[in-house]
Structure formats: C-alpha cells, structure tokens
Length: 320
Image (cartoon, rainbow, N blue to C red; front, side, top):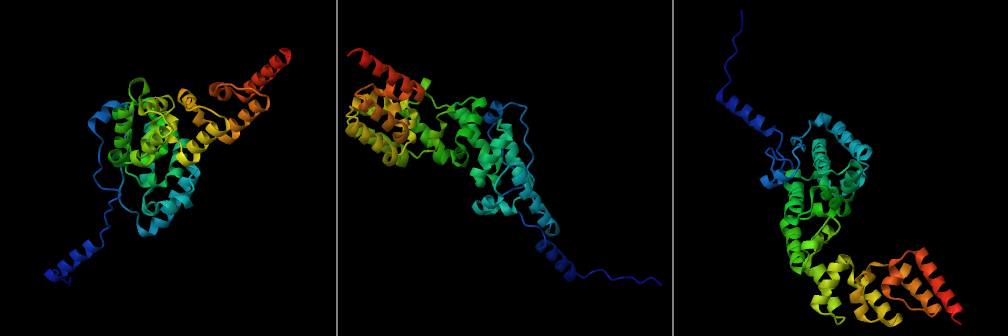
C-alpha cells in the first residue's frame, strides 16, 4: 500500500523559506543590477557604431571561484600586459570582481578609439579603473571632455593616452572647477584646451596652479604679463616651483646675467632641461665670448647649435 506523506507544517515551511533567504547570493554595490546611463547629449556625440557591452553581475559559485580567479589573472597578464600583483595590491576590490567587469572597462576604452596596448598601460598605471563602472565613472569624463571642454572625438583618445589621470578624477570635484579657472585665465578661442593641454585639468587650482602664477609675479611681472607667458607656454603650469622654476630663474639671473624681460619674451625657456641643455650651451658660449638670445640658444638642435657656434668662431677669426 502506498504511504501518504503528511503535508509540511507551517513551522517547517517558515524554516525552509528562512533558509532560502540566508543562502541567497549577496548583492554587490560594485556591480549593481541596474546600470547607469550617460546623458542623452553624450549619446548624440558618440558615433552610433559604438555599442555598449551589457554589465554582468553576480558572483561565481564557490566551486568555480578559484578557476575563474585564475582565468581573470591570466587575462590581465597575457591579454593586457598588466602586473596582476600590483593590481591586487592597489585595488583589493579587483579580487572579487568578475572578469566581465574588466572586459566592460576594456570595451569602454576601445569604444573611444583607444587600442588594447594603450588600455593595458592605462590600467596598469591606474588599477583602480579595473573595477570602475563605465557608465558611472568613465563615460561622464569622456562626455565632459567632448561636450564641455570641446575636444574633438578623434582627439579624446590622445587626451587620455597623454594623461590617463583624467579618468580617475571627479568631473564635478576636480575637472570642471579647473576648467572654469583656465577658461577665465584666457584658455579660450585659439588658446582653448586641446588634447595637448588637457593634462592641466587634473591640477588643483589653489595648490598647484595659483602658486606658479604668483611666483612669476614675484619676479616683477604683472598679472597680465604672466597670463600671456602661460598662454604662450602652457607647460609652465605643469612645472614645480621649487624643483624647476626657482633653479632656472636663479641660474638665468645670477650666472647668465639675464633680464626678466627676456623670460617674458621667451617663456619656453622653462621647458628646457637646466643640466642637459641650458647650462652646457651657456657655458660654451661664455667660453668663446659669445652671447645669443635665449630662443637662439635653446630652440635649435644640438647639431645646429654646434654649427652655429663654429660659424661664429670662424667669423671671429676672419675678422681679426
């Protein structure tokens, strides 16, 4: 005779339901179920051929976690040439992130025209990006550079390769305030921020940019004169006051007996190496009793400088 099993009691059903809830895989805030999408104006600017990879969420089962972790490490090292030990040290969240998350970041970069070799270098330099959410962390930066700064789409790639730090900066907390400051300073029109000067956006206004302007003013230059110098040679704003500007000014004024007005005319002076170019060329000129403007002394190549020096010496001999 078939045995009829009794229907589970309400207490047993409650216990079973509680057990199911306890054993449910936890949600992760790092990879939310609902992805965030960039603003409509960004979609209007990015070529329609760019397709987003869907974000995948959830953790692998315990039995497969070791195999999946190894697969993720091998992908980093073999496909992207990233130091996995460095990545895990600087970004502990990467340990629990699925490989699909890394691939979504890679896809985001490639959608902006960045090739895989450059992607690997960028991620190795800033492992924090390995666990970033493209829609929440990366596309807003691209959106800002494209629509607010006005860098053409083909040059976005160049901007990021030249300064990957742009991608780890907050748009509202860092990039936008600095952009507003530079715009007010005069970086507009033909002096607008480009892929070559976008690295200025990662500089803090109060701690980095203003001290350089104030130091140049301390040499006796007016604010407008300093602004003109900066617009002609934006690299001035990337140089250290203590390690670059001060030593070069001291050498120019004390050893070269120069006048500050010449620095105003040729602000590119600060972009040349003091030890490798400025001092050696100046000493050669002094040794032979010659003087030339800073632009003539520094802008030409080593070969052209040697030829110019030889020509000057021959003229001196012929004039005797």
